[in-house]
Length: 141
Image 1 (cartoon, rainbow, N blue to C red):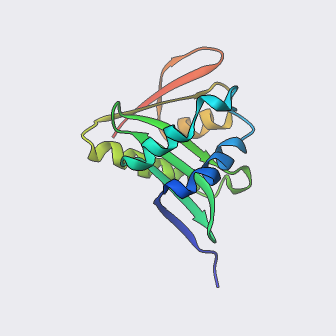
Image 2: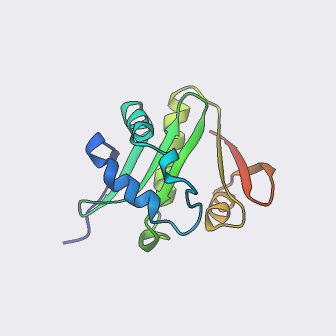
């Protein structure tokens, strides 16, 4: 039997696993993890914006779209699951949420000179601002 993969809306009970995924990255590391609280996750879960990707019941990635300002708040995949199309699927879901919310453009930021920067460039996102530490991207929906 093949591996079961599933994209679905996250639940409050998923917060510890989501935080694990967020903390497992080797780039775009939170300098102060206390700045992203459970309340942040709860807000996105309670609004139409946080989706998870599961592989055999294990959360291996998630994305969060912010319908208030048309931005992607988060997109993270466990390092051992990178390169399998999970990030692409999660990003498409986040963009669809923004589109359904009436936005015509999506925005996000990521660390400069990271794999995430290369990922967004390959996905057709345009740089709107950049410095040595951060890149701001945008794309039409």
